[in-house]
Image 1: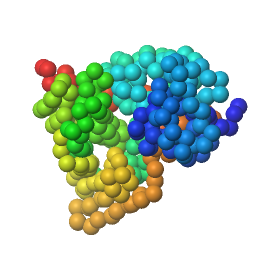
Image 2: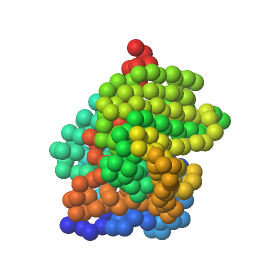
Image 3: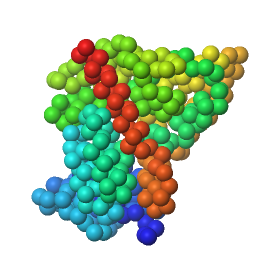
Image 4: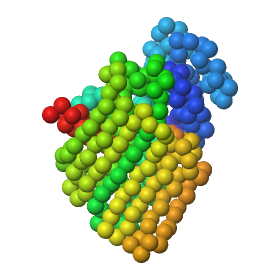
Length: 327
């Protein structure tokens, strides 16, 4: 068995260029070997940090990448509505595949990919990077150790403002845009990751839309042992924070989703006596950690920390929100 994962990127997306491409290149036990794009010019920035990168720029560049015998794993940063099809093609060709979130627009969309994963014996995963960050791993460990006592309330918020970017895929309904598919996945999934619980009911929803996509939402939900409230927006000043409020303390995470870009990732626990403990993670790169975890799973057969079944559960909560909106 090879001890090195050769990666290809399907599409020269900005996010791939700025974050995941460099992460694949820097991660241990792997290398960025190729990028498929309809425009060779878009590949130049990738070649700047990955010398020797092959560019597949023909009209069938995506197909060429999928069938390339020198590629072991494919990263898919395409628009949301293309994710399932790309994942299925990669698995059918015998490639491992890491797909940007959301992998599917509805929970049942995960099922075909899960079935294809099982049939192929290859690793397929949604690129949900935060669970690989030591900030979130520390938060989960603290919660499970009882650091804040019985949990009563989770409050989460994630916002940015892209109203001027009218061509951005997040602002387009035809590409599966919207704030909830883009960043709701973070505040919903992070709550599930730390607590290990699933929502029982969506209690209230208020959603504002523009051009057919959700741009702001406030959702409250009941979990088995706590209450949840969350806001996501593409029309507010940048902000991100998650608070777990228990009977014996409060745990707060700063920069929980864009560590280093938005700010320094920290976990802070304030006890009932108002004493405060803080853990800082100034250097951790969750994209690199994600790729290294993927490489380790491929090469060593160890369990991947964020299986499709977990990601399907987050999409199921999103589906519950959509259903509550129309009820």
